[in-house]
Length: 103
Image (cartoon, rainbow, N blue to C red; front, side, top):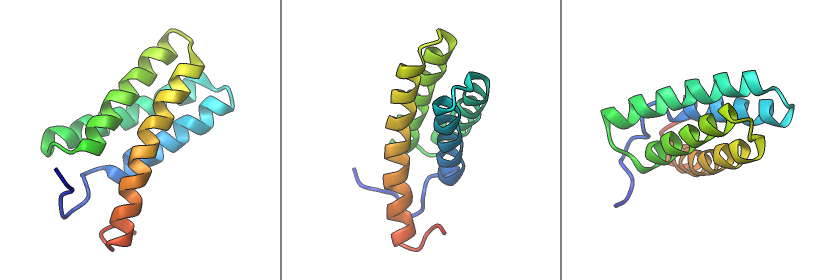
């Protein structure tokens, strides 16, 4: 286990898209939320294919769940999924910021 020395590729971007998705969901803007989740998941999958990391695996899976929930109009489930991804991404982001690896 443990972390890689360098942060996962696209960590900051996936975090940003997840935050945008959450804000859009809370505002009731399903289309904007869907677009942000889709973008974030695409980058998470890309990162995970490049180098297998737990935060990107979690983000990819949770954001996929959020897309499915948004497709069926279940905003509550979509929000739960995005919050789960964001929690993991924020933990990782904080760790790498403290280590001076990302700004």
